Image (cartoon, rainbow, N blue to C red; front, side, top):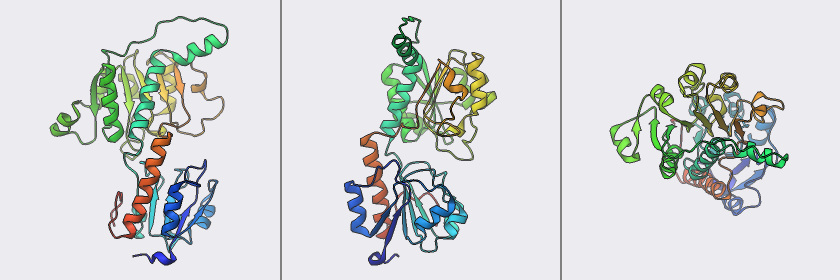
Length: 324
């Protein structure tokens, strides 16, 4: 147990700022001494400098990587509370070995992320961005769009965001197929969906939407072979993590018309490099990793991150993702 009278809480990467100046910061200051940095640590040494004296870290940005080497240099560290669902920026095995609890904030952005997936799906299907660009340039390109009502949505991953996406797809009038690493008849009944193999989902869906956390199982999940299974009229939507998709294979599939379009909020390299092939395609809608960035989701995530800290200090850890 940590002595709260001497507790130091480090927030090493509040950029752009979401925590500083909020009532959530005030909650943290009632727990202990809070040290907040308004920029991101650009290298491991800088990250260590910011967190080495702390028992608690509240991690805002996934660009801060809690490697074994970083954590080994922080002997006081007891808990890392990650603002977000993905924990791929933390070496969980090393954290367990060092007795450091890693917590996340599951479900905090489910509605916001699913709404963004729906928005990208509609924007690609109805050519909203390219039509807007045409009109602003003096054109009037009245081409056909795609009606989604009656089409099939394939939801890859049925965590909290995927389940929201199932609900939104049905609200649009789509048939929904789903794939998960852990299907069961009970979950299928509860979610009101039919679980199928990934190959069957890719082949049968008019829109494929990705909703998994990045892990060894999901890294590169959609590659050349998987894209070849999709309909030439199909749309791929990714608001999860860029490395789940082989980006070069996706570019080829889009250039060659083997799929119709893509709506992407995440990329292998972020920010997306200037001149990237995806930026030159009219059948692609791009977004700068903002699916979870709404005031409602941000506040919910920050509150949960502090809840995790308070629960850990009270001896009742919550949302811990690594064995201790």
